Length: 147
Image 1 (spheres, rainbow, N blue to C red):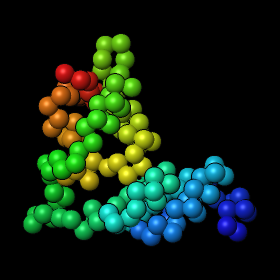
Image 2 (image 1 turned 60 degrees about the horizontal axis):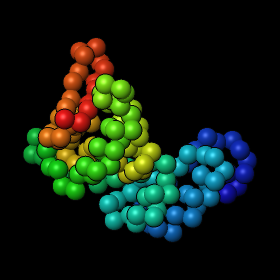
Image 3 (image 1 turned 180 degrees about the vertical axis):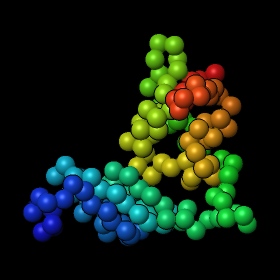
Image 4 (image 1 turned 135 degrees about the vertical axis):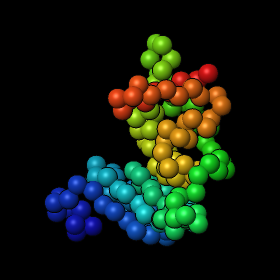
């Protein structure tokens, strides 16, 4: 709290899965600073939600035999939230910039990370969803829309 009140930092990182940090993270955010949480999947939902972003360190330990992050497992994919983010960021033509979709997902779900679902890239995750159409213009811009 001393560091918070000095006003010399822009944000905090909390490396813990302990739900006792929920009120601290909430208090820091009340002062307008960002809170980034790092912990294991056992972290409580209220603690995860109290952070601006939450990163599961378990992902760093999960590797396939070749040393790559595992790919393609769609366990508990938050499809409803993904489709809502596509809808909320799409233009009149129905297309949404993939970066905008990712930003909305991160704001709504602090623990959203495509790697949690076994994909190395958000674009790969989107390509795997049958109700979403994905396109790339080749210049680094990627777009999605509902089919």
